[in-house]
Image 1 (cartoon, rainbow, N blue to C red):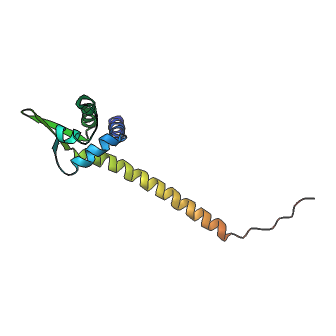
Image 2 (image 1 turned 30 degrees about the vertical axis):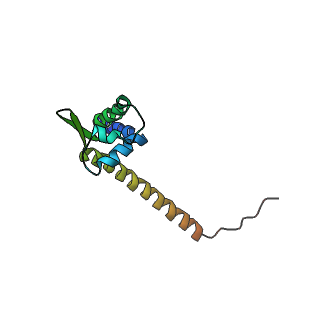
Image 3 (image 1 turned 90 degrees about the horizontal axis):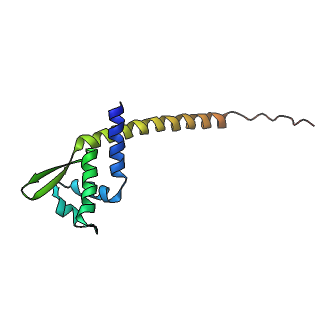
Length: 119
């Protein structure tokens, strides 16, 4: 369970940054080189590489080097872990809001008795 939580922490930390989310979005279209991924961002390559390293460390992407080109691709199993956790949270909160709705509805259907105020 601790490893599972550590993995989720890394995944959500990686997804917390808009640059990394944009990289993930681009990789959703298929593998890409570091150069291609870095092109839309106004930052030095070493700064961009920190984003890639964090994404790879979280397990969201993998990189492979062929000659001088490093290519990145998504790791779907990490997304499944996050999706599973989010689905469980959604089910929990939907059950809570359903109970709240039933309570509010039952309360509205119960007539309010007029109590005399003490003088």
